[in-house]
Image 1 (tube, helix red, strand yellow):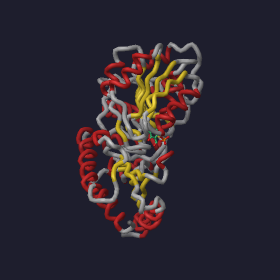
Image 2 (cartoon, protein in one colour):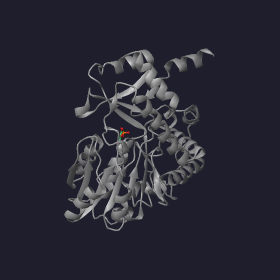
Image 3 (spheres, protein in one colour):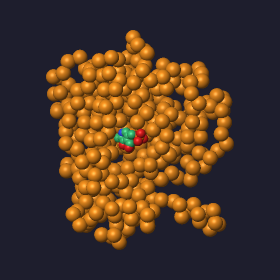
Image 4 (cartoon, protein in one colour):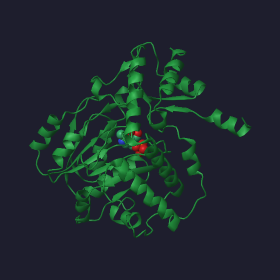
Length: 371
Ligand code: PLP
């Protein structure tokens, strides 16, 4: 091992938190390619590839599929900034921090937000959501988080999407943590806007938000009477760059897009179904190890436990401070609780290339030394 390699190994942390996840060398190499202009026709080939690969992975034919410059929150903000016109009525189903964030963002764009809440860690049934929608009037947008990273709970969205597809309501889904780790079928599930983040199951550094807009969503945006309140995230302007026109809007983060392109290729080489199954198999292995540990899952309903993000309750005799030691002495990152769960749970991410039985063993074996 030469000294550079030894140093990079030394600095390498095992990122089993809620993201970012570890970045494979292939993606790091792509990131460090020579920079080129965002208006270079050679770079447009990369943008074309990204669009086509995202379409395959989102399972959509939407032409308006690209990566927003910014993290997952930028995707969330782009969705609401473009869709909401003054006083539009928006239902947001909330059972964790990121649902709460959606409601906050939608409110800032002057929506009349109907927040429907469940306790953290729970998920909505289709019947519960349908009843709310049936009893509300003049709803323009319904929005939900597919994989609630603050709680580790999965939200079934297929039936909801199929129901909304038959209406004029726009369906917005946060797939920041679920994308390429959980089954997600944008077109057949009737999802109109779906955004994600680069740093979770894609194993690309944080900084990009893959997003897709259906024709139904585009029609609402095109028919707006006023300008989108965010210049940076205005889809009408972004489209000029991300469509065939390739007209300058802002300087695209060229190297991050190289990295994303590589990340998408890795997913496709593995195969989407294989990748999703791998997350599921590793999840089963994690559960078997958890059963022999002092921990238990925070999410009560077993069928809603996310494969790529395990939220586990801390037993009384284990202090949250142990996480600091794991990071300092073992270079092992585990996420802590958010909001009311702070100090009460740990969040263990097994995302993308990090979804391996070996990492599950590393987590439980390392932990044994500290508890
Ligand atoms: N939505 C969900 C479900 C998330 O897990 C996150 C981040 O963890 C976000 C949105 C916000 O993404 P970012 O932190 O990349 O802005």
